[in-house]
Length: 122
Image 1 (tube, rainbow, N blue to C red):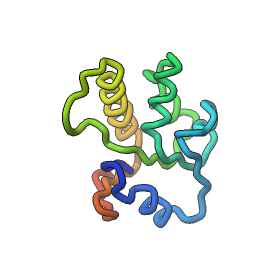
Image 2 (cartoon, one colour):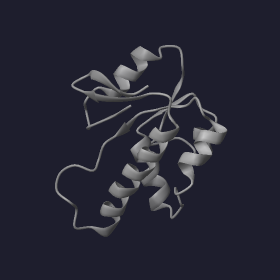
Image 3 (spheres, one colour):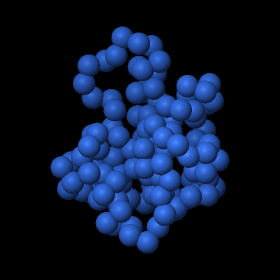
């Protein structure tokens, strides 16, 4: 599930998958994503890993191998004014690249705007 900030992605995903448990990418442990059912704030997880100096380059492939049924909710953060700060530019690009790679592996991809989901893939 992708979409802009505050567009109802998490609520939409919870309605689609009411019986799974979720972890929060803002606070979860690094390894939790390889065994959880679902994660929201995935973009925040990527930011935390990058700020800790950890590579997320192989993350999509590893998730596809180790946790192929995971449900992921992430903000689209590549729109708007390009930040002056180098880290912020790299972070935005990385989130876009990781989500693009995850979409290749995904059975379904939804974009949510104003709480309305549109199937992009599947």
